[in-house]
Length: 84
Image 1 (cartoon, one colour):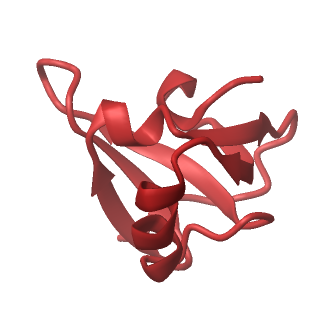
Image 2: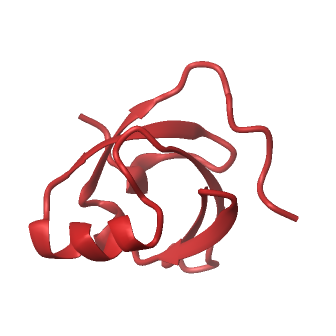
C-alpha cells in the first residue's frame, strides 16, 4: 500500500491507517484521522520535510513520519488546493 511520503506534489489521498502506534496518536491529535483527505502541497529543497494539507491547514512532516501513514491515492483530485 502507498504511504503519505510517496505522493507527488498536488496529488491527493485518503488516510487509511497508521503503521506506528505511538506516532499515530500525535498525528491524530493534529487532524490526521483515518478517512481524512490530504494533499501534498510541497517538498523542501533537500526532500525533507514535506507539507501536506489536512483538516483545513498545512502541516509539515518529516518523510520518516509520513512513511507511517498508509493512504489510498485519489484518482481524481477531490481536495481543491492548498490553504493560502
